Amino acid sequence: MPNKQASFDYIIVGAGSAGCVLAARLSEDPNVSVCLLEAGGPDNSFFIQAPIGLAAMLPTKLHNWAFETIPQTGLNGRKGYQPRGKTLGGSSSTNAMLYVRGNKWDYDNWAALGNDGWSYQDILPYFKKSEGNEVFTDELHSNDGPLVVGNATDASNINQMFIDSCIEQGIKQIDDCNGIEQEGAFYYQRTIKNGERCSAAKAYLTPNISRKNLTIITHALTEKVLFEGKVAVGVRYKKNNQSLDILCNKEVILSSGAFGSPQILMLSGVGNKTHLNEHGINSVHHLPGVGQNLQDHIDYVQTFKVDSKEDTFGYSIRGCFRIVKSLFEWHKHRTGKVTSTFAESGAFFSTEKNLVAPDAQLVFVPAIADNHARTVNFGHGYSCHITLLRPESVGEVKLNSNKPEDSLAIDPKFFSHQQDMAVIKKAADKMQTILEGQPFTAIRKEMLYFVESGNEEDLERDIRNRADTQYHPCGTCKMGPKADEMAVVDAQLKVHGMEKLRVVDASIMPKIISGNTNAPTIMIGEKAADMILAND
Image (spheres, rainbow, N blue to C red):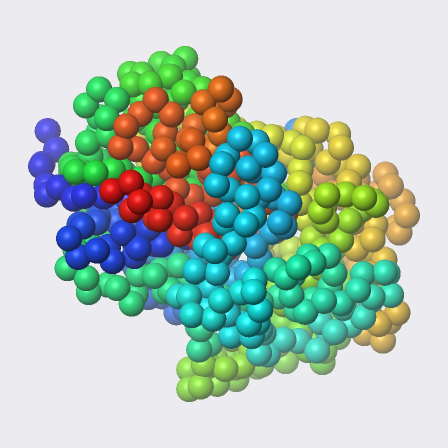
């Protein structure tokens, strides 16, 4: 039998973008005890702290779960790749550090779906509460939050070529993609503080690590939530091959992400009863929406090669010398190319008129970007991602076994809805026109994966051969009213039909947002902390 351990007021499972926020905010009260469980290790690695280190983590298992999907029919039978952070800070410790909130319409739509308190005006104060913006000082931004947000300091010169080419194609330049107007071309703001990654862990945990009422346990793989009837009373986790129980006085909060949170619920007996029985798991509560409603941003990349003398990253003698030189600069001053997030500029645009919000996002990279950096291409180049912001395709996450260490059956069902291919082709056509635009003429060489401009069959073939995630899985513990049979949590993020159990992370998103998901997930953590404390 597992050993008994201490009890805490709150147990938070997962130290990712939302979990770190919850741990910090709930432990602000010295009379409240908080335990934070994380399956990964500490976040003190050079590859986490140095922004450029993401290039080493993305294609490997370094601080990375490195999940795979099941074979995707829409991707010609390929398995998709799903890198997720496995360390304090979760994916905020391994991502590209872009600060993007999404569109006002996204949140108003959440509220319209029956989630009171989640309109844009409701959630804006929580974006501002988290944000410490070094540049913008208007009514939409804050300068004193823990998450430091600022402009690129050493962006490549060719980013301006990209923006100029966007302007040629009718996309105007804007200063702030999180401002009043999202549509336009711009330089991304990033979550970097003094030349180092400002993850959720760095922003929320590191300053509060010495709190006596905050216990952080790393390398702790959660096995299940413990219940008495339908009341959550604790968590069982495994550390050093030993199962341990900890008890909660107030709540268990799952913050393990779009894959981890539904997995833990199902392993604990909360989910579709038929599916749980297939794996020998006794049903505690039949909740068919657990693991359903998986949404993700499908993404397609095009690349053009350039000469190594250009201001780009690449595998060459000149490129390696630049990086070595910049490592010394970063070590001494925390400046230089090591502070690059690779994704430095971008754009939002609409593929047709009168849309509720832009449906396509561009992410420009002054490097050859190929297969999540798992395919090495010698030389230099520039690349651009086109991301389908509001896909119609919806997938699911299921168990492969009743063991927490076993892989999941992740099925995004990319391009299962025909509309998604039609929209991304239209968006990709525009992206190619931008990348072949006049501002790039002096430096552009051959295309890495040649697609004849205007050839729809050639383009669709290449998309199905190479497209994959933009790393934004969400929705698998859908927020919605009880009348929605696919809803897992209510607007307070409490699990339907259960007591003392919440889910707080990107999995609660009823619809994927029109942009990157890290800042919105931190916002969700801030709002959830307020709701929990208000009910305390």
